[in-house]
Length: 618
Image 1 (spheres, helix red, strand yellow):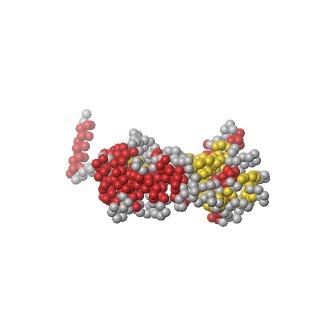
Image 2: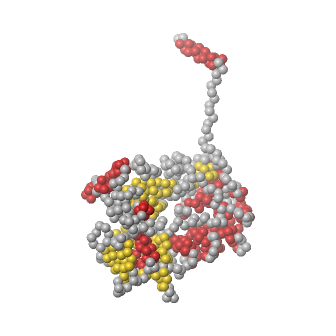
Image 3: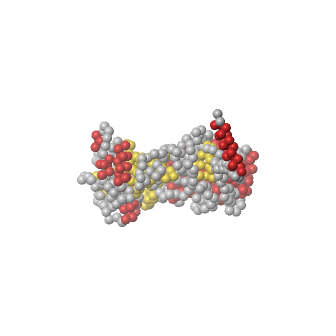
């Protein structure tokens, strides 16, 4: 009965001792804020106060690397996997077994054991790397690169990348791991540099050998999930995040373009009408005003922007995006600018660009852009064509673009062609080239472009494999003797007749393939790719090899077109290069950073669209 009293007296004694000793219980530490405030937007012009750019910072706007170890098959004895590490061999055996090699009911698959596959000289283990673009949507295609950095592999030409999964650090050479959190898949024919596609490794210099061991699969990667952009609020607040969400979704008339994740982050999903043009979408979002779009506000703001544009060294790119974000009520002000011949060219372009994207029913914006595109000189030719190609497909725009197919500026012609081909305009007739014996083996497209300009043959190196022939189909000039692949391929004319003979012997077959062809270049291309089967064994050259043959024939001046006046003109050949961005115009400001290429590893919200939201998938 006395025990509780003893404990009570003991507790009171301890408390008294603490008081007399001057000891106090330490207070609780202040809570760490959930999100840190960001600095103000740098060098923001006064007319952008109240914009989403002022309130947020764009993040997750960098290319995102994904990779994996894969197999390139169907090589012409130029592969090998003996020199890969033991860890990688064990990993590849496990992956092959999981795909059914060495097992199952099919006898061929049972006999094709993982060990046998890796020992085959027609197979090579390769590192596959792709870069997911910012804002990429599920199902979107992108290019991937392949590389076999080993001396035993002499060439990846003619190879086919076997389907594989791409993950973060999937191609780790030290510790390859099973693919988890898959971001993309990849497969398809390997495209090597056409300049060396017809060369064999014997006698090649070291640079050529390295190039033959590397290539890309054009459009061979496909995103497996959406990758949103992020808006990081500079002053985290739930009310502001919700206001940004409402403003963006209201502007695009869609519910799932923007989602307020919490009080510091908003997620952005690129609308499908923008395709892969995430940069245009992101910049437009940043230049929206949070106040919204009342007619009075928009008209006043449009006039303010016009006054700002007239200032020397005005940031016209920002002004143009702000105009675009104001929408339909800004069109009267933009129409006034376009109607004035005294307006400076750079201001006219900024206004025409904004009006075209808004949707100018008068057609003045499209006509102004066409004038820029068709001008013999100026800084806005290519940019004007690109804007015309990114506004909604229409007969009026296509009619303007058709006239640019005859432009003396090659870059303008090529941009107009790519837009018209994408719009399925009748000025571009597309024929798919593939194997006559395998309908699923579609190798590339040949586009016959209605043009009166200089004869030109153009091959793409990214996106979709396409060969464009501008103007009449060239004919092969005779006499002809063309040899490549250490003389395993020959295209030659006979002393009598108007045909050429295509002769090819690969490294495995004792029998050579021999076909006769008319001098029509389209027929030659179709025969080389295997499109024409006249009863003999068909040819089967890859897209890169066909481009290399066309390059060689053009270099030797054997591709000719006869003009309506009877003049014989040489047809040039051009391979696609990475072209300038639409915003890469000297007079438009590009100094302000649009993002810091970072993104936090956010968790999936339970009441928002699911999917990876940061650099690290959940």
